[in-house]
Length: 275
Image (cartoon, rainbow, N blue to C red; front, side, top):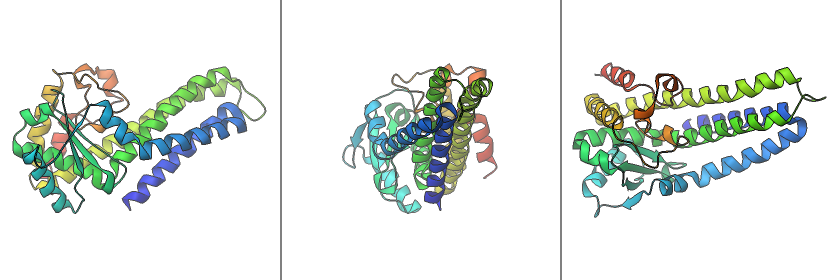
């Protein structure tokens, strides 16, 4: 069922992108958008995880090099009936973590050095359970494709400035409206999908560990430290993947309206209701 939901969303976003290409440049625009969407989805599906891990200089670890972390993940994957994901440690002081990969067999979990130094073993377990919940529901692929299509729609809107109305396109006023509305709509879709998935992963982690309070205290620590420590290689295109927005310390109130993460206060409140 989760796979069906994932592919349905990917298809819907792709069709939206193709439709927008048609609005800007008619049949030619639809063809170009179709080819571009196919290429982007292919890349996102097969190569985005490798690229993201490389971008953040993630170092692979195993039972010998990270015994405690490995045993936590091993225990939780057995509980969640998931294959053991590849494990990575990111040499960053900002405490954070993310999961990536297109399916169960090609999943990876990455945590920063700062997270392992800051959190207690119970809190680390809660964070890992959160990331495994993302894997369980194919959130990594959904988030990557949504972000890719949203960015492509924004780029297409910029190209649309070079096209006017035509026989098979709307008039210039409609075109201008679409060029403002579509990128905003794509951003709202991305934001909504990401926020809902964060809430779902928090709940999944609480049920997986049986201790919502572990994730509550972990989230509070992560949020507090993320406000004072920047992540050097943080990229807005991948910020949605992290358990805490790596730009937390730089977010202004207006930007927070379009954040891919719900507020930590909201997340802690929802976890409180699970006790």
